[in-house]
Image 1: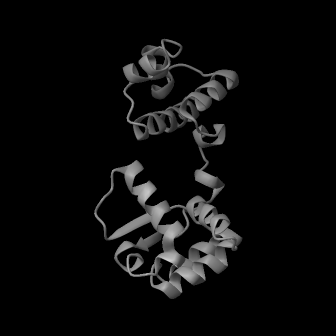
Image 2: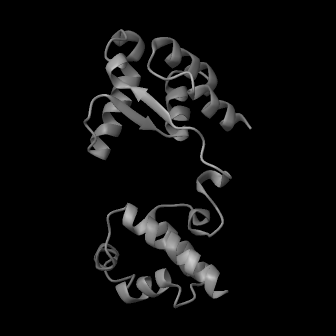
Length: 166
C-alpha cells in the first residue's frame, strides 16, 4: 500500500469516526477493547497498513459499507454528489394530514435523530426519498412530482431524481 493511499484511507477512517462523534478512546470503549485507540490512530495517520480483513471488520464496527472507507470513492460511487433534496417544513405543515402524514412522521423522526429542530427546512438523502417512495407506493420520480406539487420540494429536486436515474 503506497503511503499516499494509506493516508487517504486513514482520512476516510477518521472522517467516519468523527461523523459518529467518537474519539479514538471512544472507539476503544465502544468496542470493549477490540479496537485499540493507538492502532486505529495509526491506521488514520497512514502509519500502519490495515489488512482487508481488519478493514472489513472496522467497517462493520462503524456500520458502513467497506467501499465507503476506500480512497477514490464517494458515497454511492457517484463522481459528484447529487443535488440536495430540501423539504420545506413550513409548507408541509399546511398539506392535509391524510396526504402528508407519512412524510410528516418521517421528517419528525429525522429531526429527532439529528437534533435538528429549526422547523423551516430539512435536507433529506436520496435513500430517504426512496424509502418514502416505498411508503407512498410510488416511484421516486412520481413522489418527487407530488411533493413539488404540494410545494414541499423545490422544482430543482427533479434534477436529483434524474441524477439518480442515470
